[in-house]
Amino acid sequence: MKSGPAAFVLWLVCLVGVCGLHRIYLGRYWTGLLWLFTLGLLGIGQIVDLFLLPSMIRQTNMEQRLERIEGHRA
Image 1: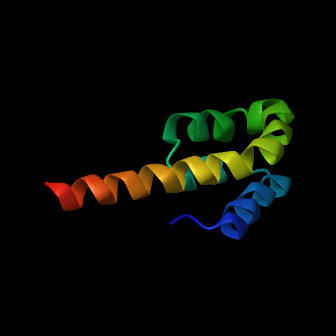
Image 2 (image 1 turned 180 degrees about the horizontal axis):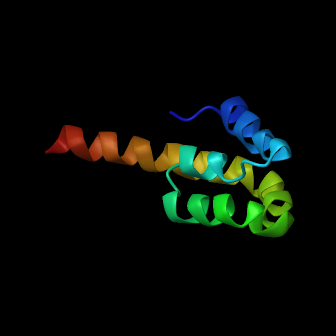
């Protein structure tokens, strides 16, 4: 399970110039690297992510739960 507060702390790390860590933490590696190399899409993507972050956390946790359930069935 991914932690909401941890994701928000990683989002805040962008204030020191390292953007995208929250996306990498949530398993969105390619967009995380894009954010990292473009400074959060010049800051615009980083601001949008502030509002999208709760839904990204829920989606990642739901995907992990489904993988665990499917793993128990096999």
